[in-house]
Length: 575
Image (spheres, rainbow, N blue to C red):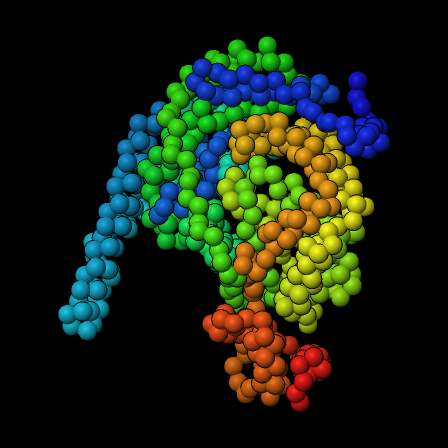
């Protein structure tokens, strides 16, 4: 029987807040350690699948940042069974793969040799040597030639084409800091097809066209992190320096896509080694939601996935940075709309304070009734939107609570910071109201209901929760813990974590325009410097803050500068 969406929503919304919502997850663990989870949904003859791995970008080895994300791309390239126009070319392809690897290694060796020789020549003669040689040029030509020859054998996107022929939809994958998952939805009568395809992908992957795909990822990196034109938008240019500043020792200090130098030097064999180490059945789970029954599907799962050998557990991530004892700031100059990203160091998922931190995030920026929406968006119109959340960039290890916003019009990031700090200070002094907390709890409950209704959202939630915590039921238990949060808990975490000493701030500002100095700038700079000196004793930090704020002010029109100058003169004196 189908339950209409509205009826289900109303049924939960009108239930007591003390009621528990649970998902009947059936679970089996195979002898090789593979976890199988099923939630039966018999509304339609379909199922959706997630394969989750307890490995993400936080597991990237030093010097190979981005390998988890690269591997995600490569697992769509096929296996020993599919991906070639003619399967009989498998042996020939293997020879080509080895030749490509050998040529790329030779290119790297020659480039390093030339760079070292150039440096030695500079120290000896004062003139640097050439970093190009006939040998290097020939290696590059040979490398391009073998890639072209190899490409002619490949059946492009055969993985997706095979799924499309049997009604597969939603084919995708994602690499987070703490986990990776692969997804697809299919008619229920194609379950064994799914088993055959995915078990083959996990047992016999062929990382073909690796160097071509790596170049695609390098371009993705350039657009996303260097230019700010990718999926993250302009905020992308702040992400890399922000994380590096916040986590100087921990894996969270690197972006999932990695620096260009690591991508350039990353070898196919390193990606294969990461796969073998982290994509073992004892570190993975099959999450299935739909018109299936465990007793009927388990034999096929055993037959296809049960043969994949388990691996030794890798050494867990254990690095924790020393406590931060002072605010950290950085400024990125780029001709884009100014924006700010602020983070505070907070504990990992599973800490008793996390539910209160999640409630705090919603009180600050959860919808049109939130505090920051009323003050920064509707009130002062400093920005078109401001977001606050726990768990950036991950939650398995000590992490950040972050707030981000893009400046609107002639306003500055300084104004956004001021409003944010004022609201947090109010919460630390007074706490939220019970009405605010009740609203957050109600929204959390309604959000969980929506996830339970949609088989795709439910499968993803179970997969992510299992991969991060090891307990697939945690995502529903989170609601129970949220319901226990009191206004005093929110007030306590606001006092505990939201201090300048735990804070990191990154701002994007437009470069100062060269030319004649505006006399208004000098007056404003003197007064702001005076104000900063009353609050910041460290001269270097004070200068950093002053430069950041003046970088934004210099780009403002004269009328706005005059307005700022009048406000400063009224507050601090001066003409």
